[in-house]
Length: 437
Image 1 (cartoon, rainbow, N blue to C red):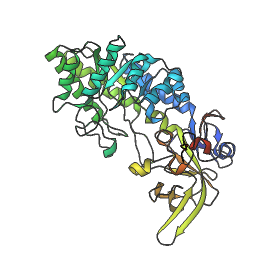
Image 2 (tube, helix red, strand yellow):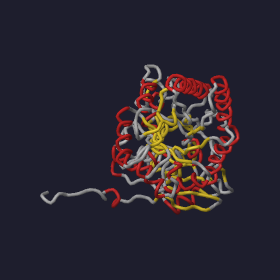
Image 3 (cartoon, rainbow, N blue to C red):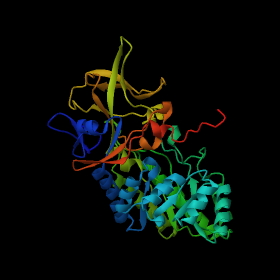
Image 4 (cartoon, rainbow, N blue to C red):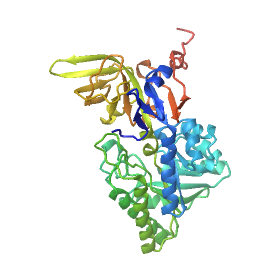
């Protein structure tokens, strides 16, 4: 019935997540409210880790792509489950550091890392910096020299793969802000250049072809293209690439129409390609890295809202307004992303009307779902948007000076706050009135 197995309906006809009644969660913590099922997050981590251990004989690591949801508690959980971390900013790195994640389990991505971020990362001896461009390569070599270190690096490669996803989340084709391309030779050239530098060591290559992908073939093709490139580098400039990072992008079930492939099947299928190509090309099997993010946390999360008004524009549309919106979930405004929704206080009520769920921001485009089939909705109802564990809190904002909601972690009927609700003092915390005003 639901897009996530974390959800159920209890005897009061209320929606439950992680053994917690959503109506009671709202009574205790208010709305809007992010809720995450800890057990499902851990289960998803184990699925990936077990598949990596099985299909690559333990010769690899699963990194949680923390941009999906970065909090100290989430970093702690994925570390406890044996995963590493993929960070894309100094802030995400600092969060991991404060959560106690070992620095030798962290990979640093990003297309424009600042000098200060690179200094910070290198000073902390993180496991890998994934280099995006020539300017960054030069900065890393310079900073490493100043710190008296040799830094292990990978290069982000654009393999020229069409991932069949939304244009904004395709990242493997040549026209992308990320990485260096194979087609025009720049990937080959930058690795040759790096091999002559004193304070960096080329150990790996990385690709990421996009997000929310349901098809196996792009992943298999990306692995083939990358291994052929590794063979070329070995044969022509005698550099043996030890590590192949195949990124993430595995699709999840946002709506009942979505049909994602089991994640361990992704890993098994790609491992067959990797082993076959390595045998064909005479390559040593590289250390394999994968970077799931959305698929670990999105299905484990929901967002709870309170309905404030129902506006029926006759023969046009019915708007259901909630006390959140694009400030806590900008994905509809960005991508017209689709979600399922449930009335949490009447969870199995028949869906009898088509409505558009609107947020409270002063923007016409502030919607959470358009023309979605729902039960009869009244002011005061509690509305749950499903599969919101990824890219909701992490992309939230204070637009219209709206405080961010809290994040609550639930497990076996117990709820704990892992991010506190912001208040108005948080909104003005960094405001300054100059003395001459």
